[in-house]
Amino acid sequence: MGIVQTIANGNNPLGTKLTFKTEIDGPALLLVSGSAYANVYPNVVIGYNVEIDGVAAGSPQLYSNLLNSHVTLVSSFQQINITPGDHVLTIDALTPWMTADAFDVFSVSLWDQAEPAFVWQINGPVPQYTTFNSEVSGTALVFLQGSAWSGSGNQNLGLMVVLDGNPVLTVASFVNEANSHHALPAFIAPVQMTPGEHKIGISTTSGDFNSDSNDFYTLAVMF
Amino acid sequence: MALSQILYQGLGPMQTTPIQFSSPVDGTPVTFYFGGSGYATGSETPLEVQIMLDGNLLQNAMVYANEGSSHKSLVCMLNVENLSFGSHTITLVPQNMLSDDNDSFMLTMIY
Image (cartoon, rainbow over all chains, first blue to last red; front, side, top):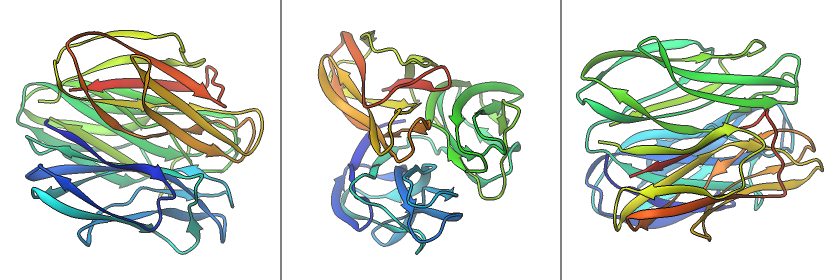
């Protein structure tokens, strides 16, 4: 992995249109994180529509059961191809029943990839597993963020990345509200990798953990 | 090859004493990624963790909490810093935010 470049950190994400310069040439990952809120109806998907030079480049999102309550979105980590020079980043609302304001924050960064990363962005429910190929031997980075909900509230929600049958990254968070989708924290951790095919998945660690098609998960392995 | 090191990992209450670490690089960009959650007893509160590198604000992680006593995941505002080789400290400074053993944290250095 090479350069990480911060493109933007700020508040009031919607309507962002900025020009940035990069030296990165080739495949890269665009990490977009942030918050927003549903202001028209509860129980809707909210998020950002992110583009670079008019081309879709990611969509952090969450199913918000709450109305007029700021929520953290599940980050998007999307593979793009970029060339050195000037580019334009734009961020707009993903759906019409949401907004964001000065109390919402966002962060956009570009991660250069010397080797192509494995990125898996899925809807729940979890557990889910897939396979990928690694051409490297040594330390890689694994990123995980996802959402879940509890039927009873006041529960610990736990997620983990399972690589070849072994947990390699665990994330935990507490949800106070019942029946309300909640983004867990995003974690990045080192993981040992060998060349060849690997089975990787997202699983759960706690009891009253609910995940459905309105939950979003982003898993990336960067070499 | 992605090289990284976990500088801090654990459950709350979040450690606020300085975290000592050694930079393996000299003058090249280093990224610090912080994930975690917290809460405030009152409603309508901006939760924040300031990430201080050698006593200077490097970046923060934030979210606005409308509900009081409700755990919220923070959004990491990522920054990149050129580090000199050798000893440094990172200090996590909560602003308007509490954490307990229902919150988890991870701070990773990527270089």
